[in-house]
Length: 250
Image 1 (cartoon, rainbow, N blue to C red):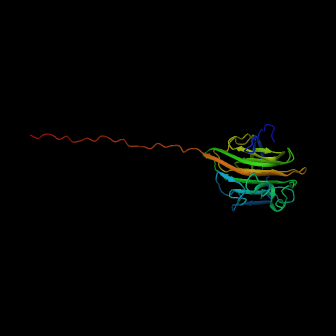
Image 2: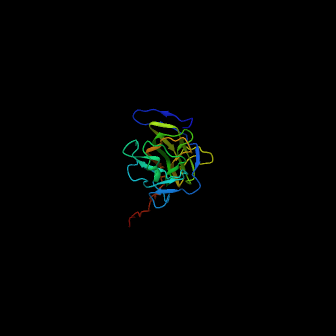
Image 3: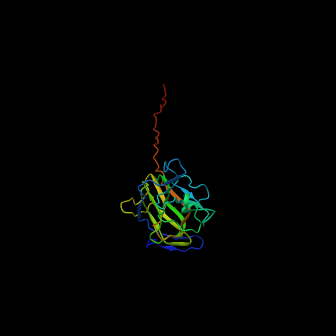
């Protein structure tokens, strides 16, 4: 977790965790070993700028694409699993899906050299007044080396977001990514006014010291549009018409 992160404990809701959106990362340049998508082509067309994902239905659902870039020798994706959901019966486990990940027990440790993504988009924020991604997650990783990275991009290559690493296994925490408040050098400071925006969840591990990884649940993207600018309607002003005044005839 970033040094400026803050935790606020609450009883009724999961504790909130803040990681500043100042971590820049690119997706690997090569082709993924595996791509799974609900649509016919990965990131083929614009999807809704408002979204809720609880993992209770089909996964990946509309707008989501799963990719595996890892060098572990196995296939590990973000998987819909019945392992410790925050609510309902299912949640998304980073590395707990795919041919190899789906066979992991709920208390198993993730593999070495996992690099897996779940990407939503692209969506259009051309006329957006705000756009915020919220999510809940729990789990643990080798601190500072194995990471849950939650980020946004306008080209699905250069990403900017917040990074979570270490022990969050005591319970679910709530994370937020404000798409209008980004601080990555050389990248846009806001996604508002942009087209082809994506958000993504990365799980990345190195070649040693594994843990249980991270499970995410109750993801929501809430975007509010600017009110349309009113246009002036031209109205015609009636003009007086001359009237004939009758005259007396002698």
